Length: 246
Image 1 (cartoon, one colour):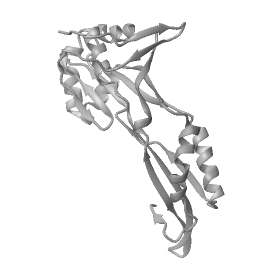
Image 2 (cartoon, one colour; image 1 turned 90 degrees about the horizontal axis):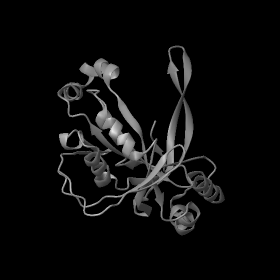
Image 3 (cartoon, one colour; image 1 turned 180 degrees about the horizontal axis):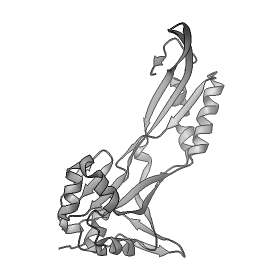
Image 4 (cartoon, rainbow, N blue to C red; image 1 turned 180 degrees about the vertical axis):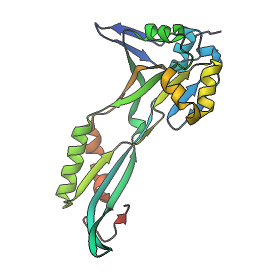
């Protein structure tokens, strides 16, 4: 069923959790998957009855997430609207400037999976569980000095004379790898959606304690030094060209 050409997972156990390095490998294991913006999911029988096959499924699909940085400068504007015999205040959000930068290329290709008590034991627990609505989820995260980066961008905006609100967010996709039961009952619950929601709530069992931690190939301060000039070009103190969003 499975023929791994090389071993790519090494474990170092701590007293509380196991940290496992996991990367994609060549394999002859065959299974069907569904790709979504959130990631990859599968209910193929091939990965639901063998912990080694399930391990390979996570191996194959544990690629880095897609991550952007979205910087917005914005402010609130107040107006009044007649409501009956009185006026009520209306507040709208205006985007003064916005820039989106792709950070995906800075994410290292290998990740460390955090599991308790261990990665293999967690997979075996899922395989051995008889719940008919079970699923096991690997969630991807990217470790970086986000707070430091926000402060650096805010300081840059202030030096440029921008005095209003600043937000820095990190839209991401390809964040989860999910294996779902191949039992017919569980499939019917997923197929009929909200109709079966109460049943799903009562019977579904989630194995959702797996976390895949990726790191960046550069520090936040180094990245900011390299990209501050580009970011500065988008910062404006002119509110006349703002975009009303709410």
